[in-house]
Every structure is written in C-alpha cells, then in structure tokens.
Amino acid sequence: MHRPVLHRPALTRIRQVCSSPRARAVVGVLALLAVTTFAPDRDGAVAQPTADGEDGGAGRNVAAASPAARRTGDGAQDGPAPPVGTRDSHPEVQHVLGLPPTASTSRGGPSAGSLEGGVPFPLQAEGAHFNPRRDARARYGTVELVQALLRAGAAVHARHGGELVVNDLSLISGGPIAHHGSHQGGRDVDVLFYTLTAEGEPRPSVGAPLDLAGRGVDFQDLSVAADDVPVQLDVVRTWAFVEALLSDPDAWVQRMFVARHLRQRLLRHGRRAGASRAVLRRFEQVACQPGYPHDDHFHIRVFCSVDDLAAGCRDSGPMPPWHRARLASAGATPRMAGPERLRAPITTAAEARRAAGPMHPDVRAWLDARDAWMRPPAGPGVCR
Image (cartoon, rainbow, N blue to C red; front, side, top):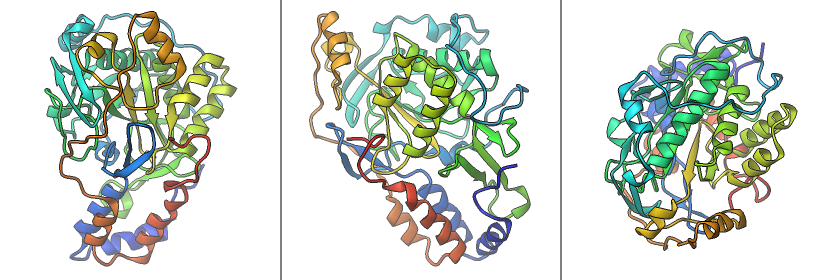
C-alpha cells in the first residue's frame, strides 16, 4: 500500500489547528492554495496571478466510480479508444449532441471574450457529469467543446467505468467569471482527474493536489482526523480521457494545463500502454504547466472554430504549425487575441495565506512542500 502524502501525526496536529478560532480560515487557505494559479498570457508566457483554472478543491466526493477492475496506476494496458456513438438516455444529452457547430459562437479571446448560444454541459450524462458543488451558471461552452467532453467521458466509461467530473466552463453569455482569469468565451473547461484509493481501487474523483508520486489526501472535514482518505492518480482512466480527447478530430485542443510531474506520469503510462505516436506527440505539445501548478485538475482550452474565427473569435498563443495548416486547409487564417483582460475579482494564494493568520508548523510544512513543483524552472512540460 502506498503511504499518503502526510503521516497521521501531522494530520492529527492539523486538526488541532482546525479546532482553534482560526480553523475556518486555515481550511479556506488550504482550499484556495490548492487551486489558485497563474494564467498564461496570449503568447504563452506566464502573466500575473489570476486564479485562472482554480477550483479543483471544490470537487470532492462527487463522481460515482463504477465497480471496475482493480488498478494499480501505471501497469494496465491501454489501447485506442473505441468509437463512441451519440446515444444517451438523458434528454439534455440528446439535445446537446444533436446541435450543429453553428449553434454557438465564441467571440474575442479567452481572457476578454463572450459567448453567444452557450451550450450547457449536462448535469448528468453517460460517463460524465457537471460537478454539483459548482455553480451551474458556469457550465456553458461552445458546441464543439461540450460535445468533445461528452464523447471523451463516454469513451472512458465504456472501457473502464467511472465518470468524468466537469467543473467550470463559462457563463451562458461568457465574459468575466469569478475566480478565473480566462473562461470567458466558452472554450475553457476545468475537469478533475480520475482517482484511485491507496489500494488501487477506483473511487470518486476528488480535487486534491497530487504530489510528485501522484498521491494526495482527501481531507474532507478538516476538523475530524478519522475521515482522511489517501488517494492517488488513476493514470489508466486519466490517460484514456486524454487519448480519447486528442484522438477526436472534432476536438481542437490547444492547451491542457497540468502540473509537469503529472504530465510526465501520464506520458510514461501512454508509452508503456502502446499509445499511438501521434497522440503521444500531441499531448507533449499541448500539455504544460503554467506559472502555478494544476496539480488537482486539468484546465483544457480549445481553438476557435473556423466559423467562430469569422465571427470575431480570437485565439491566444501558441499557434503551432499543425493548427495553421489545419486552418489553411479550411480556407481560414489564425486571428490572435490582444493583450486586454477583463477580470472578475480574484484572491491570490499569497493574499489568502496572509489572511489565514498564524498556522501550525505542520500546515505550513505541507504548503511549503508543494513549492517543490509549484514553480519549476523552464524546460519541457512548462508553458512558454
């Protein structure tokens, strides 16, 4: 059995901190520090902290993992995703899957944009659901993005069981959205990683930061030590989701923001599982860690569609040659977003930590340990 990130004595002392008058502040700062991040600017460089893509911590204990076979993380074989149809018993899903791409229009850039005809991600679908702990007003995206997520979630469900947990997309008309620096044009989404128990059994997805070994702790009620649950990345199902999404010709994925150490873990599994060279290469190209880690969820961004480009949609950087060629084959040219940003109110990690006041040394030690992967040096797997 793998050991959890924190030993029991440390967790017990953290609960002692949580019994003080500052308990709720400590809980709040742990949650915020787990999700606040930096947004990459339009040319890929790291901009100022904007809490872009935070929110994984709000997704605890919401997915219904099915009784699939025992998994141990890196060992299972993984092949190409089987074809996924558009049949689903949920009326909302049937409606969404039947929409033409022109039913929605994304305008502007990810950080200064709007959305017309926003499509709601279904509250429940085959192999996926919108996180009920999130604000349902933030579940709108373009037709292309929502349909791609539904197809990928169904593909994983057909092979391995379990459900993809989807957090925030955009507001119904786009524009600034609380706690995000982007997510304004319906082309951004946060999804939780699939997770396992410490023993390697499928479990509900949880928005817990995962360490360099892909392990974390679902703290649940921080005032009770007995309910802490060690978790680990389900690399098999998470890679199956990546593979399904990147193999989908209608899912124009531009970025998958994810902590570099988790990116490396997924790539290693993909190679061992015999994934196609094309999928591995594409994941290497689109997956990267921005200036602050996404160690508890993916933040996924898709390119503007050809129709949306004509209507005023603007992509952020980078603009890889393979996407330029794809646009050229459709008679379109790239249109890049400007530097402007329309921001909703946000709180940085440093502000949250200061506001929490005195914390027990074990709490600080846990947060400090996270610095090992929070700001890695430039190199492969880091957004440029």
